[in-house]
Length: 341
Image (cartoon, rainbow, N blue to C red; front, side, top):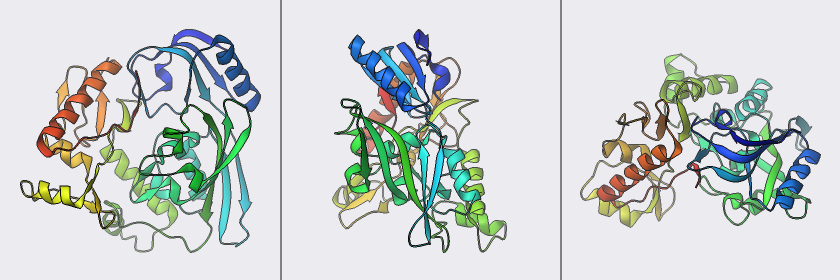
């Protein structure tokens, strides 16, 4: 394990903005992870864990130790009902490569989550989701290292407290654990295909695919995402920057008096979800540029680094968008990206 000091780790993040930290290490096993944590405790400095660096924005230098978790490995275990498989991936496995691994073996449940950036270990923290599916839908359990005691603890779905882009690890468990592996329960037959969300079904029908396979759905999701979202390797971004706001039906009815065309998705008898992308586009931000930063021309949820931006420029852009949406709709957008202040 090589420890580096006072370096810019922007290459480990997808926004590609300056990301200075006092200390940086990459760990590939539990012993190295514990050694790195020992170092932080001896120095009495904070720790920041990163995986694929796809959900983080550095505003200022981080005065502590950044640990990049590179634990690798995938294990399979046939479930006792013979219709599912339990598949465990270490935290450092690339998420999309893991999804490809599963779909190529006809393991169903993750195909709609194709091409989401990041690593497996961070997927439960955010409860990642796309095209009508969420990580929690196939989640079985995870193992996490208690940073204080170094004990490995097992969390089931209930103890993870999954919510919309939310979990125990973003709230009460924040800075208390580091996830080391995640286990999913996937179907091996009679897959529950989700093709009605977004453009998936329409695009499949255009290609005369009437009985889609897992591979068909994965390929279609990848095609749609590539068409709508910028490649971080070409244009720095962190994918969706904002959450879709959830409001009461009473609040929606009040908004509809002035904006009857506002789209929404009913999620209960009392609550609806609004597409943040529509709100941002209505406020005039889609495709807009301000200096080194902007809002992507094809997807208004995505803030982009147009060249040599810094984190504060992107943060200030997000602040302006939040203020404008709030002025129009009286709705406070919430950032999905982890901001390092």
